[in-house]
Image: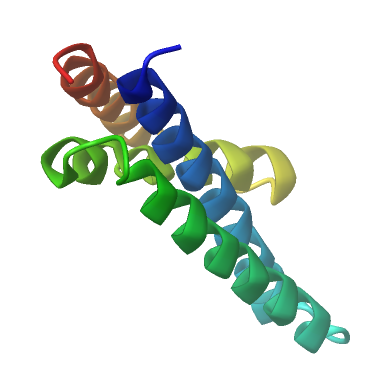
Length: 110
């Protein structure tokens, strides 16, 4: 695995971690009890995400890593649909596909 591939993998991993952090904060907002636990878990995930993203910057230019961060929109959409049972309309799915296409172009030219 090349350093660039490692950086891309780390950046994508950071977006997945961020997605879970977002879901945990949403659970905190909805919870009748245990808000603090969900909030703490969400904040911990954001801290880990920042570390992983920073690690990716050792191997990628910011001009590559930052656009890959848009994959967090994809991750949050998938997780909110799967874990929170939120509805996602067709327009949002088209947006997800466009983000995937754009991120793929950035990664291919990294």
